[in-house]
Structure formats: structure tokens, C-alpha cells
Image 1: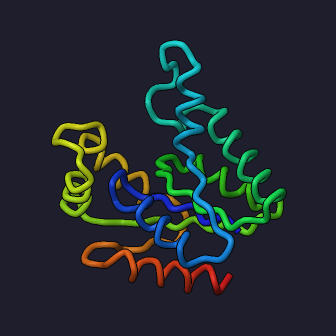
Image 2 (image 1 turned 90 degrees about the vertical axis):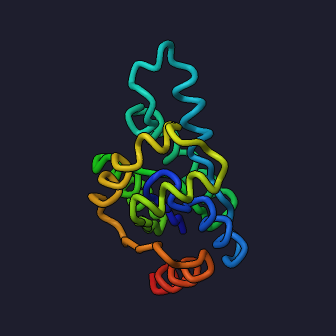
Length: 169
């Protein structure tokens, strides 16, 4: 199974993935940012911009790597990675087409909550994530997935909710 955890930058995707990894059997966290950095970093002058989704090979490589890991190691794969573009839902669809049970969980939070979480993790006002809170909130809100409100909730509560969702699949 693949659980792709999306949501605004700083909403708590990685924190939730780490909590889920401890609670799920045979789980690992797939770092789609490493794939994105490799893809974007090898193009001269960032021709598609800063957002990994805008690099066609990023989605293709993620699907191929996740599929290979799933097939060879039979792991539950957690992917904490913001998706902003509706077209990126194609990644989820491609994983399903190759026979991998895949769910898109979209975490949501108020601007203030996301802002405060970004500061709590050590970033500063004016950083890239801060400047793009609303972009990532709007993009995430438009995604076709299971949306979970995170304001005022602990990571434990969120992990239990996600586990109950994936157990039903």
C-alpha cells in the first residue's frame, strides 16, 4: 500500500509520516524530495521552476521507484510530499494502475497554523515555504483525496484517523 500525504508546506506531513511509520507494519518513508532534488538539480538553470511537480520526470521517477520498492520489498510506503497541481493526481492514478493500493491523504490547516508550524521547525519569516503558504493551501484544497483538518489536533490523533482510513481500504 502507498499512503501519499499531501498538504501545504509545513502542515505536518513528515511528522505524520514518522508517526505512521512507527504504528504500521512493514512501513517505510519514501522521500520524494530527494527524487525532486536529483531531477531539478541536473537540469541547467531550473527550466521548469522550483516546484518538483513541474518537472515531468519527477512524477515518472517517483512512480517507477515506488513501484519497484513495493514489488521487491513488499513495503507499505508513506510519501509525505505536497502536491499542488491537479494533474499530479496522475501519480496516484499510475500507482493504482500498476496494482498498488494507493490513497491520497490531504492535510489541511489555517494559514496561522501552517505559519506557526513552519516557525516551530526552525525556518524564518520570509522563507520560501512562508511565501508560498497560500499557494500550497489552495493547491492542496483542490486535490481529489481524503481531506483531514489538522488545526488543534495532535499527531497521535491524526495518525489514528489515517490508520482507520487505510484499514478500511
